Length: 429
Image 1 (tube, helix red, strand yellow):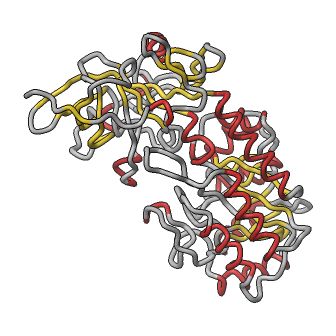
Image 2 (cartoon, helix red, strand yellow):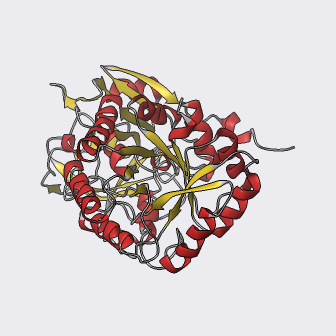
Image 3 (cartoon, one colour):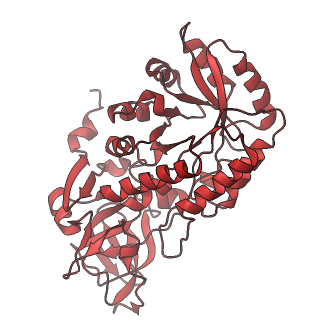
């Protein structure tokens, strides 16, 4: 079948990590390093992080919030990219870390984080996670329910205390995928105001817990600023909650995955949050925010090798990865874009980029224009820094992919590719 030419989308370079350039021969450079050279060295699939872009994003958040509300902290939502090297960058740039579980606690500590800068989340914290938090004296624990209080009071030794926030449902439904909504009535996270008020009173009477403030979160991949401001107003207006020294306003700002995505910028997002805080929260309170997706998504891309091209009713371009390294499409219907490395320009045909896993839903990008794809080509998918590494899995015996940092034209592997021995290591014969 003769490929049908279609108009090329806007230049893919504008979706690749900031600072990406293209050489005269068409080769793309991320972090100054040629993607084809990285692929030849570390293989594919591989997640490539532009380290300088990641650091710049961290500074934009930290400096932007501090200039608007001096008594403030930015803590990176580790769950979006729970890689020790990424956490270490955040620590080096002066950010705290939001950790959601024991694994993120131990990697945060390995990354050099001050335990006092960690904020522990979770709607069902396990006893061993509570024990880790107490052992290392984490800075804040976000209490999600009364069971959290029971476990904390049982675990904290006499003579010690722990600072806590209570997570309150603001009752705000943002425009995003249902699976990443968290601030709506009926959310599994946090407490409705009627439940929060007596729990706060119990914590204030506890001999080992210090009630420091409130936590709220409205969801993820939210493109507009209004829901964030509405949530601040809603929580501040709940009768009986009182005023507190700390307000954690969560995260949730969206990232740009496609040509049509237009998320609010960091300045607009911070203006909305701080404007709402000035209107509704105590002037002396500390503000905390927890950016995740918007911090890391656009700083990374994933490299694949084309394994098969089938032309017929559709043109299927199958690569050597898929839902084993990117579950965002199957779980959240997240749209990505893609391009053939070295041929971003030129004649294009409409293609279905699919993975190698035994699922019909293993589609990375549906309906994307690619320039004459062929077996052996390198294909790049932008904006894979958030939740791809997090949700990597071993489906079909898949070996989880490496993470590579690129900066100044050089690169280094910060998470190695799994081996066949890794897959067998947990077996008990």
